[in-house]
Image (cartoon, rainbow over all chains, first blue to last red):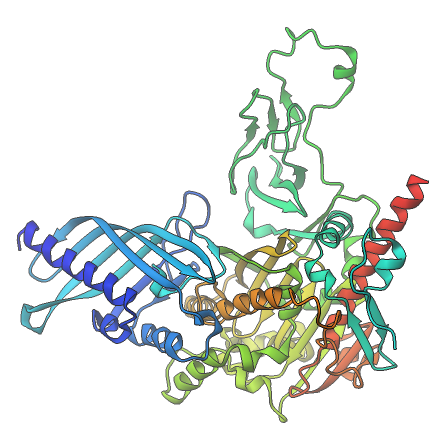
Length: 166
Length: 458
C-alpha cells in the first residue's frame, strides 16, 4: 500500500462520511463502520490534558460496538427526543488529512474537522482533530472505519452535542 | 384566593413576599414566573443566595496533593481552592490585591507559587504574599505598609466528609447544621466504600439558555421522566429485551403502582427524592452483603434505590445506576453553566468502574442520551415564559399537595432524619411538593437580604 493510495481511500471515506451526516443518511453512515468499531470522544480533564483510558476515566462519548451507535441513530430519528427537534442543519468540513500508517490490512489517518451547525436561530460550531483506523472489507474492495477518535477542542458545550455534530 | 403579583418594580420585602403564595393546607402553592425571567431578581439571588451563605465548591479528591488548585466561582466571584504545603485546604478570592488580575489563570493544576502576570506580585499556596516586586524602591506610604498584601480568604471553608463548601459571609451556621438531614444522603455516597468516594477524572462543562432553577427543579422532578426521555426508555427496554449486557436504569420502573417512592424537604432549601428499583443494574449491587454488614441494612437498602437530591443552592446528585454530581453556576437570568462529574466509591473493582463510567456517559453527559433532552426542555420553558399575558404563576408545584405531611414519615424515622416535610406513596405520584422548600428558602433569603440592606441604609 502506497501512501498516495491510502490518502485517496481515507479522503474518500471522510468526505463521504461528512456528506452522509449532513444529508442525514444515517443508515448509510452506520454502514461505514465495522461491527466491532470503537467510537471515542475523550473528555478534557484540564486545559491541557485529555482522558487517556475510556474504562477508568469519563469520556464525552465511548462505544465499542456499532450497535451502540445504532441506538443513537435510532434516537435521532425516533421523534421521541426533543433535543433533536428541530434537527440542527450541519456542514461537515474535513481537511489536513494525513496518513500516519498504511498497509494492506490497516490505514491510520489524522485529519482536522469543523462542523458548523444552525439550530433555533443560532449558529454554532465544533472543531478539532480526527484519528481514524480503517480496515479492508469485501476482499479489499471497500474500506471501513474500525476506530474513530474525535478530539473536541471547544468542549464548553452549548446545550448538547451528538454524533452528527462532530 | 391570592395570586402572585405580575410585574413589580424595585423589589422590596413586601413585593418579594408576594412572589410566593404558600398555603399548602389550603391546597395552594404558587410561585411567580418572574423569578425565572426578571433580571433584578436574578441579581438579588446571586447576592443574597449564592454570595451570602454556604455553596458547594469542590470535592477534596479533585485536589488531592499539596499545592493542587482548582478555579471556580462563588456566585459571580472568582475563587481559587487549593491545598497548601501541609496539604490543608484553603479558599481565596482569585484576584490580586494590587490591580485585581486573576493570580491563577488555569482551570486546575499544581503550583507552589502563584505569580500575578501583571506586576509580578507572588503568593504561596497558603495565600500569603511573598513578593511585592521592587517594594523597597517603591517609596510606599505608611498606609500601604499597614495593609496586608495576601490573597483575601473566603470567609468560611468547611468540608463535610470530602465535600467542600465555602461562604463569603462569615456569619453563617456551621456547615453540618446547615446541611440538616440532607447529610444522610451525602453519607449514602461516601459510605459506599470504606475508603470513601472520589470524583472520576473526565468532566463535562456545558451551558443552557435558561434560568438555573430549571435544573434545580428537574433533578428532583420524577414527573418529566416518561415524557422527556421516552427515547432513552425505549433504548433501555430494547437492550433489556435483547439481553444486552450493557444495562442502565429503566425509567419505566419509575412510574409504577408497584414501586414505592417518596421525598423529603429539609431546612435551608435542601430536598431529596427516592424511588425503589431493581438493584441488579447497579455496579454497587455486587457489594450488597458487605454493605449491610458495614453500614446496616437500612442504609445499604437506601444505596440500592434511585435517589436524587439537592444541597441548596448549587449542588445536586442523581444516584441511579451510577452517581452524577452536578454543580450549577448561574450566568444570567436566562443562561446557566453546568459542571458534571461522575462519582464512584474508591477502590472499586475494575469491571464495576467500567460499567459505572459507561452508564454515566450514556445517560448524564451533555453528549449522552438523556441530558440533551432536559437541557432543550429548559430552554423551551424559558422561551415559553415570554408569554407574560398568561397567568403569572404556573401550575407546576401542585402534584402531591394533598398528600404531603409536616415532619417525618415512617421511612424517614428508619433513616433517622427529621425532614420539614415528607411525601410518600407509589412512584405514580410523581410529587411536586418537593420543590416547595427551595422556593421558600430562596424568597426568604432575598427578602431578609433586602430588608437588612434597607435597614442599614436608614
